Length: 301
Image (cartoon, rainbow, N blue to C red; front, top):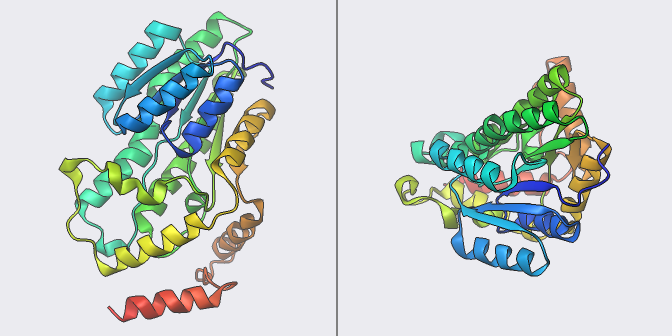
């Protein structure tokens, strides 16, 4: 159980918007030291100014989390300024859709680079620092939160690259939890699996590196983008709501964090498919009009 956050240090990737920004706001209110990380400089500057105005001690760094070198430099800077962090939010993420065979090599490299390698780097660099701090101080408590998605527990069609990346994050974090439990009782882990929440991820192509720019989007990608924009934009659960759930989960040492607990029914259906070795259930069985519309749009290509 972690009850006192004051004076503790949190590293937050994707801190310029969405869940990262809202978690930073909670951290500032709780009197935490904040390491704000984002690839978008203007959003990062705004977040840093806001947290400093709220009284937080802030280290702000523009970092591409897919880069091993940039993440290693970040980890060194964190250790130099604050020592080992108590909390790491590996939250940075990007989205990309379309029929899975239509995704380009650069689509895969971009999404897996941020969504998977970003988490890998956060775990491999900060966990040893946290374990060292725990070994030196019996009172030390730490926690790592990796942001996955309900797409890490399901496989919705026309968004395969994203699904693959988020399944990897769930697997990585479940393994992290088990590995940590073997060596310490002082550092925990959680995986955040949000459903459709307005965070800006549907517009993440705004920060796509020039070296990984896509060509002209395929029709399936345009259809997927439109569906994602509509679903994310109509979400009634806010990023602030989810951020509070994250802090509550850390305090309670709760592993799975859901923004929409009712969506778990779909996970149960998928697991029943696996257990019974039956073909995957139609993901639109409860909303057939959406499935029919998607099928008609794709078959009209």
